[in-house]
Image 1 (cartoon, rainbow, N blue to C red):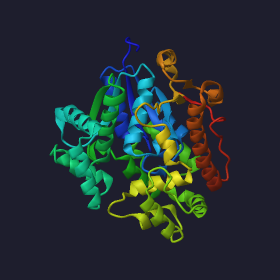
Image 2 (cartoon, rainbow, N blue to C red):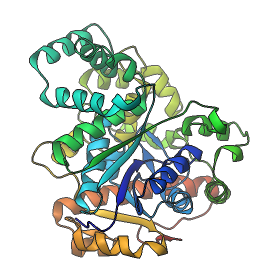
Image 3 (cartoon, rainbow, N blue to C red):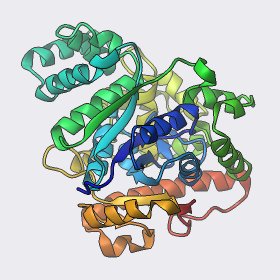
Length: 406
């Protein structure tokens, strides 16, 4: 650990980078942190969708607005449930050896008690008492989705859990805390309350995406530098949406008769998918046909994306869980030139291979890490294949694309 400087980590998607994200980085710098390291999803994101623009454009947005170093969260975990997503991000940042704090946003009026609430919930879930497991299974049998069933089961011990877990950002905050207390106890928590939409002109990433796809102006909701980078990316590659992958998904669904081996796909969902796969022309249309009370839109989207990307549960399990290190390398997407001290510290203290050039992967990574890395390369190729088809322009792959350097 490098003790002469303070380094904060953020796990993010920046889809796109907006005023709230800039506010978070600004608060960290004002709090005395010398550098901010971002672990960012690549070309596909946790809600089971492609990012609206590619990871390099979003890296450029982040660097132009105060981030010092952007690393890619391996795509296997970027398109996974909150637990896998958060755990992989926490362990990657902790493996750098110089990040001392994790910063994240939360929603609701929980005030200074937020840390103690997160710690209590995290410790309880990490122990998973029999009484909790029994209650959880009972609510699942009653037809509740997993997030709803978990919130109800927790509420029997923690009355505030139901209101807290109604927000997706709070679910992630809880999973970050669980991962820290299991795998990275040296990381400090730096929770930041998120403001409501409309406060000081802020809008959520979801709201901004809706405006973008509707052709509405969004400049007021992004920092000027981020808006410029986003506009340039849209002019070059267009906006990317789930339905752009409809034909690719449909073809993949025709090839098999059992999808239960894919990540997050149950046998019941597999059977439903086989019944309806020929009844929708689009990615979103298929999700709508599969949506039920006990299956969230996000989970179905992730399952379909994992099928399209050929991500199987056995692969996810092989890189996750106790005794397994899902942080096998740190893949750089970009950095600021004035962050040389940070880069030197990472190179010196990182417990995992640090990739500043993708071409070095074969020499630096062992077989398991190379397997994980290859999934990132494949995901990027698929993403840019669709962008090329839409625009008639060939885009460089991960081996050809230069780092974003500001």
